[in-house]
View 1 (spheres, one colour):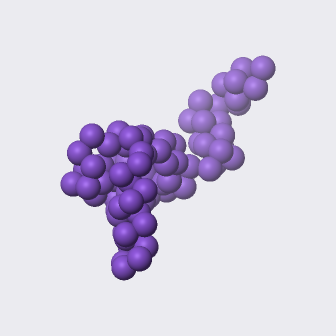
View 2: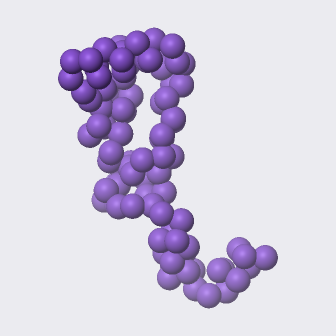
Amino acid sequence: MAGTGEDEHVEQRALGLISTFFNNLGGDLPERLGHGYRSLCPMKRDILCVHLSACGRTNKRADRAGCDHLMQIRVRMAFGRQYHRRAAL
C-alpha cells in the first residue's frame, strides 16, 4: 500500500486484520495507490480484493470517472431514449 513511515505501519497492521479489501475507486486508481491485488498480495497472500468500477479496470476507459449521472448519460446515448424510460419504471 502507498505510504511512508507511520502510515505504512498502520496500513500493514490493518491489512493483517482483514480478509477482504473492497473499493469503488476509478478503474486505474487501485493499482496506482497501491490498493490492487498485486500490491496487497505480498503482504497478505489470501486477501480477497473486490474492485467496483463503472468503466472497467483494464480497458481504454479505466481512467474515466464512473459517477452515476455520467453512466446514465452514457446508457442513454448508447441505447437511446426508449431504454432510459424502461429502466426508470
